[in-house]
Amino acid sequence: MEGSSIYGLMAEFDNAEALLAAARRAFTEGFRKMDAYSPFPVEGLAEGLGFHRTGVPLIVLIGGILGCAGGFFLQYWASVIDYPINVGGRPLNSWPSFIPVTFELTILIAALSAFFAVLALNGLPMPYHPVFNVERFELATRNRFFLCIEAADPKFDAGETRKFLEAIGSQRVYEVEP
Amino acid sequence: MDPEAREESVGAQDSLALIEPGHTLGSITDKISSIVLTHRTPWFWYFGFGFSFIFVLILLYCIGALLAIGVGLFGIMIPVAWGFAIVNFVWWIGIGHAGTLISAILLLLRQKWRQSINRFAEAMTLFAVACAGLFPLLHLGRPWFFYWLFPYPSTMAIQPQFRSPLVWDVFAVSTYFTVSLLFWFLGLIPDLATLRDRARGRVPRFIYGILAMGWRGSAIHWHRYEMAYLLLAGLATPLVVSVHTVVSFDFAVALVPGWHSTIFPPYFVAGAIYSGFAMVLTIAIPLRKLYGLEDFITLRHLKNMAMVMLATGMIVAYGYLMETFTAWYSGDIFEKYMMMNRMFGPYGWMYWLLVLFNILIPQALWFRSLQTNVVVLFLIAISVNVGMWLERYVIVVVSLHRDFMPSAWGMYSGTIVDYAVLAGSIGLFVCLLFLFIRVLPMISIFEMRELVHEENAKNG
Image 1 (tube, chains in turn cyan, orange):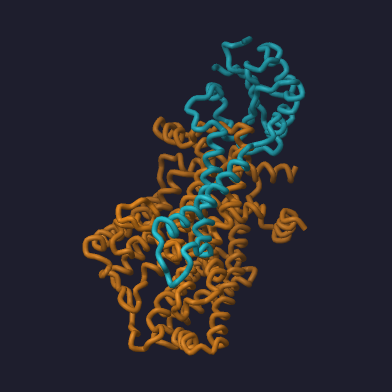
Image 2 (tube, chains in turn blue, green):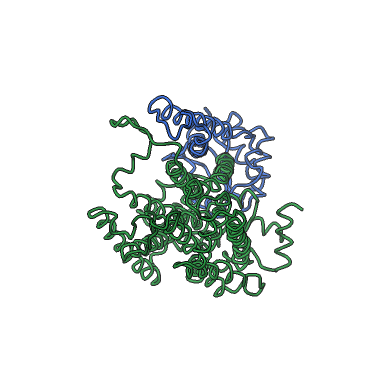
């Protein structure tokens, strides 16, 4: 792997528009292993990097369905099978009164799925990541925008990529230690 | 007209900004994070925290006494077996609703004015639900057996009664708390990363670092994050409506006159939002003054909240009207007596006070000049807080004290322990809020950055 002594090259930008333009340029240039960092969600940035589907909605849907089915089954099992008790002559499977708890458990499991899905898919918690080795990167949570092209990208070349990043409007380009 | 365009035109017409001009991404970040990261805790923080902590101690003392001696310390008796504890429970859980409304429903409706108030409104929700949860537990008599409410393979070989609204309540409130917590914490993660990067001490860096879980603002992460946040908002929206509906079922499913009514679910939900917005205003007005956040929590926000309060207040007023109408129209002797007793019985003064606090005083909000008068708004918010507590008192106690058989009637009044626990729960709520504003950003920093970005783009 070329340039294996570094994780990649990171370019700094002043505003979201510049970062978005740079990310799109880098993608058309053929770079794939890269990521952009911004202090707030920038519309279209993930798409600009070639990332489209999040996978989160499907996980939430599955969670919701499991919560719904599990919630109803929990009550059915408790009221009909495990502890059948006659309340005012109502049928054991008095499903209309099971709706509120079924609904609550649907929401609960779907919400838990959404929360843990976003963490798991994003690979969080992550105690160490090379981008934090760049001193200025702490401004990524304040007012600066960064684009990092990883050395693992097949098109990566320490000298050429640096020139490319400078050409697309970044004043500062840093080497990211692994 | 799409919501954004409408909002803009409203803003232009009133010339009240969402955020005062002149702010940049950096200045927003520094201003909000400096409240947390400063070494100098302001005097009013010590005062407020200390004062509310006294009430927390009173609460702890009362809880100790209740555990040691029993619920006989409350004023509950037969026929009024649901006293202050249930009144307070419904009151607190209602207050929580505004936080979810602001953070979830207004997000789905793309109302940008939510962005500077959603964080502390969500925190308020969490603390209010925590206070609410305390009351049914204490009211159980033997709180250490609370887990009997959940279905689990117990050695007693029994199961909870899933046909009972009280069991639905357990699921509704615990789901509500969990989902509110997830929503709040997910919203906090990028801001915790900001604090991690801004903090200079080793200990805060470490703690915020652990909590931020390595968030680095990657575009792909943001993409998933926004999707998950939107889905959580979509899930929280029906949830918030369901919670107070289920709470109202505790009453509506029973046969007691004054409880057994189909109007309860919508009217409880409207009342919850009403009292919640009143509480948000009660907190926001002093907070923006003390911390100098007038640039972020502008008069526009206060005005919008005032209008939500006015609208939901009118729904609540309609609910009172329809309750009275239904009692008369039903021709049912018990319903009619319940209403007469509510208005002119021994607790009649409470009903008229509630009409005064909840309906008459908030009508002042029709006046445009009063909508942006912070002192008046604060007083109206307090009035609604008190009015909503009285409403629950009227529903719970006044309905129970005279139901069907005159031989079973009785009079109820709270004991010193009832009042102390109520005051203590308010103390706990305020105390938790003070802790929150000291250690976590009370305004969502990344959403404010988004807002600044959009405003700057709009103004060129």
